[in-house]
Image (cartoon, rainbow, N blue to C red; front, side, top):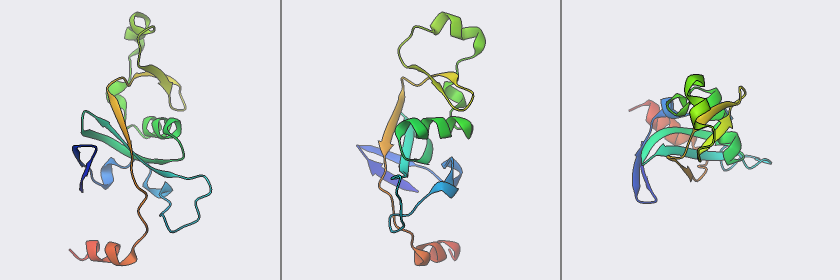
Length: 122
């Protein structure tokens, strides 16, 4: 799929989605306001995550092995612990340098049985 948002042409597929089973379509009851977050690096898709907040989106992306590129190795952390952009993410609370990471909150599409069926028959 290709989408233009904020002047960038983003491309992603289902394999870029960290937690597709957590998608709550627009037309369904969504008390926690779970919505899609596109994490990118200068327009290149890192992943798409369904979460109720940016913090949860980042943690979910890490826990689903979508942010390995930003992980700071233990051997390098001592020299970098005071740098901006370093945050601890995921269940393991590991250090990540996410200064170059961009975030776009995507619209939450409704579920369409017809669109899914059409995609299956192509």
